[in-house]
Image 1 (cartoon, rainbow, N blue to C red):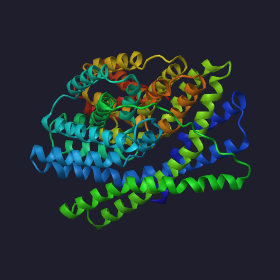
Image 2 (image 1 turned 120 degrees about the vertical axis):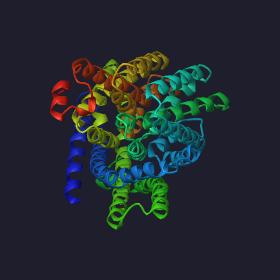
Image 3 (image 1 turned 45 degrees about the horizontal axis):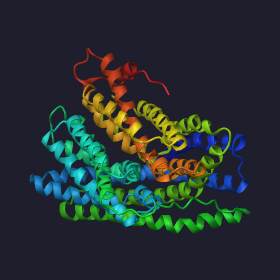
Image 4 (image 1 turned 180 degrees about the vertical axis):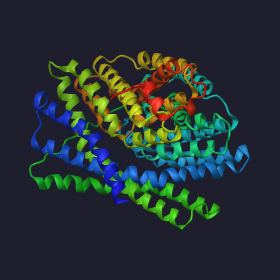
Length: 504
């Protein structure tokens, strides 16, 4: 365990270090910060690194085995209605447990946090059931995505403009560090009962469909919800005078985040206990391993969320506000792209997805290739988000063309790339996006006198959209360069790497 923890922490260090250096350089050149703010940021970065290490190891030893077990056991029912109902309940439970959603709900003005959370949870539950039934009934992922996204955009024209950005953001935050390992593993568990050649391809796509439900439900909420005057409470930076003040700030915030994480983990533990008591699936060593994994996951999330919330979010808001009011405000676009390229590497669930893709495809798609494509996609999305915050252009002008391109590509690229691409979109928009990039955009919008609801919110949605195009373009390039290869899964690892020929 200790050696694995060191390896995971080392991975986290190399993921977080670039974004830390970028912020430090900006503080020297464009936005001078007092020593107290910088100290908060660095302590937050340290907690983030250690927290990611614990989380990755914990998710690997608890969430993934549990998700696979749930997926396998549910399908033994053989009754579609029972499978659907159980899946809806599990979808609601894990969504309510998602810290990312709670972060977004606390930031969104004018809507009760409880109302937003339950609305989003209902959407995830229903569409997770749709995703599971799709695997069992062998329905094309591409076709079902086209149908639902077409319906989504039609409904969006009837929803208030102020709800559009939040609706699309909610689809991104629901697939965070708690839900992603669980849902991805469920997909593998469900697909494992099938022996046909498309089983591997169909193991992906659950995250993609689960992200549609929240968008649809929040839009419907906007249509029927009587919105009052929206006001946003800006992020405040604590005044730091001594090193003891730093300790005090983190000590005061730690219990709050610890409670949120405990509330998030308890439902997942309940699912594990119910599964074990009813099926006796895990033997003694496996049970101990899963329990230790839950402990690691809890410690990791507490450290991660505290570090990001206390150290990163205030700095993100400060950078956006200060740069937008200077003569260099257009530099926000390339700065945002640079931050986006590296910040996705610091998302906890990204590492889970990348390694699972590499394992399921037997090295056909490597974690390195996934990282590179996701980084490019998120860099573009953050640049577009900065452009929106500065100019106030409608999210429609970006979201609709982006999804049209993604859906067209889904009809021509190999199936496995479609599922991975649409799953990666939800995974890329994790806690780093909601607690650093969103405050960054809010800081820009507020400083320029824009509408926070329409101009700042939407960055999560854009981060969730561009990887769909980036990963599928990778798939298209692969298809063009491998016409002579008949069956995708039979390609050796070395051959796949040489064909893709991506370098970071």
